[in-house]
Structure formats: structure tokens, C-alpha cells
Amino acid sequence: MDPVIIVGAGPVGLALSLALAAQGVPSVVLDETSGKEDPRPARTVVLRADMAALVERLGCATVRDEGLRWVGWRGMRRRQQLRQVAFDLGLGGTEEWSEDPDSPAAPAAPLHIPQHALARGLRDALAREPLVRLVTDARLDTVEQDRTGVTAHTRGPDGTWWRGSHLVGCDGARSTVRKLLGVRFPGRTAVERHAVAALRTELPWPGESLLHRQPPWRGVGEEVTARPLPDGVWRIDWLLPPRGELVTPDALVTRIRETLAGWCEGTTPPYELLDTGVHTLHHRLARRWRVDRVLLAGDAAHLLGAVGTQGLDEGLRDVDNLAWKLALTWHRAAPDALLDSYQSERRTAIAARLRAADQALPALRGGGGLRAYLPGVMRGHDALLTDGHLGRGPLGASPAYPHSPLAAPFSEGMVPVGTPLGAPVEDVRVTAPDDTTVRLRDRLGQARFLVLLVAPGSGVWERRHWRTAGLMPRLEEAAEALPVASEVLVTDAYPGAPAHAVLLVRPDGHLVAAFAGVRPEELHAAAEAARGSAPEEAPEEGPVEAGPAGAAGREPVVPVEVPAPAEASLGHDRTVDVH
Image (cartoon, rainbow, N blue to C red):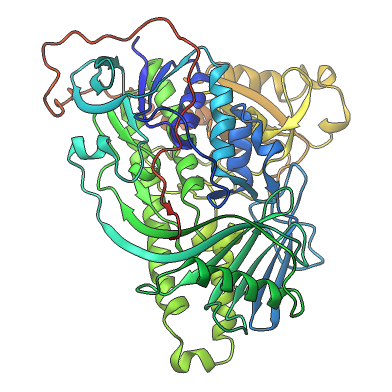
């Protein structure tokens, strides 16, 4: 069967190719650049713990070697510290957590890493993957579809026709794929502007990130954020007015010196300036994310990033959602309708995130007025903004898909657990079939569903003592009969779950259903729904409309050999040098 064509060799395109390869799907990654890129220390990304775990599972070693997990977060306004949160630096952490110091639950630490280091780690992993071919100097100019696949043409030293089962546009905000499809990309331009500097220095809170609103120093602005990186490097962002204020090098140096002095008791510490830029954030959302066999992901499908939201983190969530669905479709283990749920779930989640940010912006950036002097109003604004940075609330929490077309049909055997239906499951410790104890996240991303049994006390016994006792034989038989590949795992406890509960988990870690005990028919119906079809029968694949013309009558050529991949580009850079 033809490979999947991925257009764009930024982190999203590279991650998608690796995620597909992990599920036995070959791909060709088309990079319009030469694959060479200069490092930009001021261009960094923040990944929530689950997305950092995703890229690490894909073989990206730089998340450990060149990224930094924050030990905590501080929120300040004027001279007052309003909030301090300690992060969980272990393998766990939780999506549901409390700021009560007596609470044992703590948020999992985000990962901060230069984007060029992340992309390099993904390229290194790709170089070891025989199912992926990276092609540089390949600029797409034609896409055409038919009933059995996609034909694409690239310009370059040797113009080439490519044939694939599907094509995914991961080619950034100026996506050629989106334009060839004629998909509109409405939204707002320049929602926020930030002056950015990467510098090496010592600040009073090593390893902690800081959000400082209304700092009491002249010439700094209304909001400053400091985020640590390895080797004593910090990325500092100053919120700029929406219009005007040209940031000259002298003005930026003044901001740096006054900010550092304000944080260091009036004296500017020694610092080494590594990189500068102006980062402009836009909010846009593509009208369609799927046109038959062509799909969009990452910045080609959405732009966001204001008030603490993280654009690349959301792009990787696109990958996590799409890869297993595309893999099952490619292997013909699910109806083509499964791919429709990608747009339904991810576009709805991004739309909700953009709507929350747009609703928050007038209150956070509106200049105050009488509301700024009312008790609790500013504190509430600070909490809302901080939530976006901490990965909670409407601006930052991991998306759930409660109204997904893949939702399981209701049955009397369902039981509530601590995770709502459609939400990401907690990363509990589980016993795997090979008798090893691992994190639940370690078993994700393999195009198989997870069947998780909550069995109190199982953690103190070797698996060979209980795998043939109690519920296990019946559960393994039920899992074997599912319409999708599955793996049975056992955990000693799961938040909110009663003993002997059985959880069905999608390959991307979202909860399908939880049952009181082993219920083979209900478990089968839930798995059938989660693979995109009604329990009775899967819908037949309908005809595919033709895409833009340009390749009709030409024999597509895809080399069978997989040469050593070249370096890939980061794609479109929206951080511009300061002049």
C-alpha cells in the first residue's frame, strides 16, 4: 500500500512521521528547504508533561538532554507575590490538582526546550527509522485525489510525482496544502506582540518560571515572563502594546537591564545576550481539517498562543489524535469514517481554546477602569492568566472529547471514575503482559486499545500468580474478541475507580468507557464505537471527490528504497529578528 505523504518537516510533521512508523505505516516527508537551519535560542516551546512524554516515546532524546522541567511557578503583580506552585518532577503528576499545600497532588512539570533542539532530536530519531523517508528541496505545487489515493507533485532540482494513500499538510501558517485545497483560514491578526530575549544570567529563583504583571519599574511594560532553560539560560518575554512601539536594540537592552535590576534588588547582574526577537501571535482556525484523503495539522490548521496557550503543544496533540486513526485506516482495521472524528474532536477543542482566549483578552488587556479597583477582580485576572501557563482551566487544560462521534453507547454496566469520559487518563503505574511495572503512558501510541483492570493488591504479587485467577481469564478472552487490537494491563488503583473496574482507553490515552467488572458485550460495543462504526456494521467507504487538477494522466513515482534521511527544516518561523 502507498505511504502517507507528509508535507512539512517542522516538529509536527516529523513527529507525525515517527508516530505513524511506530504503528507500521510508512511515510514520505516533503521539506521545501535544504534542511539546514541556524539555532535560535529565543525560539523555544513549552510542552505539557503528556506531550513531552509523546515526543520521548518517539525517540527524541533531546527532551531529556537539552530541555528543562521547571521546579515551580511564581505569579507576581507589582511588588507582591500572588501565587507559587511546585511541580511534580517525577514520572507522574496529575491533570487534576490542587494548590492546597496539604494536598498530595501536584501538577506534572512542563518541559521547556529550544525548538531547534526539539526538531534536531526528532530528525535524529527519524534517521534511525526505515519506514520514513525525508526529501529536501521538495516544494509542493500540485495535489490531486482519486478513490484510492493522493498524487502530489514537487518542484526542485528533479521535479517528482509522488503517490500516497493520504496526504497531511504540516507546512505551517502559510500552508501550501491548505491553499491548494481552497480551505479558508479566518481569524485575528497580531492578537499579541512580545519582545523576546534569550540570555545567560543568574536570577533569584533557579529552575522556576515567573509571570510578573504590572512590574513597578519604568520602561518595562505591563507584563514580563521569565522561563528557565538549561545551562543558566532564560527566555524573557515583554508584552508589547498591540500597535506601534518599534523595538530598537537600544530599547530592548534598556528593558533587559531594568528588568534584571528589578528582580535582583536594584543591581543588574552580569548577563550574556544570546538572541533577540519580536514574536507576533495570531489566532486563526481553518474551516476544514479534512478534505477526503488530505488533512491539515499544526499551524496549517490553527494558530494560537495568546495568554499562555501553547501552539506547538496543540500541534503535537493533533499528531497524537490523528496518528492512530490514520494508522488503523491505512491498515484497513477501521472504517474511513474514523478519520472524520479527527476534525470533529481536534477542531472543536481548538475552537474552545480560541474562544476562551478571546473572551479573556478584553478583561486581561483592557486597561482596567473601575473594574481594576474592585476587590478580587485583578486577583481573578491573574489566576485566569496563570492557568493558561500552568496547563489548567479553559486556557490550558488537556482537551477532552466528551461529545466525540467515537463516544461509547450508554450501558447499565458503566461506572464513573475520576476521569470523565473522553478525557485523558491518569498516568498510573500498571503491570504489563511481560510482568514489568511501567507508566500507563509508556503503552500508548501503538494503534492498540488498552484494557485496564483495577485490581487492588495486584501490585504486591507477581503477575504469574494472578493472571489465571479471578477475573483475568474472562477479561483476556473479552479483550481478544474486541474488533481492534488491544492489550490488557492491571493497576493496583485508579483515581475514583472501584475495585474490579475495567477501563477501555484509546491509543492516544483518552478514556472510552469504564465498566463495573468484565462485561464482554458492552466492552465490545464501546470498542466498536471508538473505531468509528456502529456495533452492527461499519459504514462503507464512499467515493472521494477529486482535488485540484494538475496531475491527471501522469504516472506517480515513489522510490521504494529508503535512503538515509537528510536534516529537516523547522518550517515557518514567526519569531522575527529585532532591528
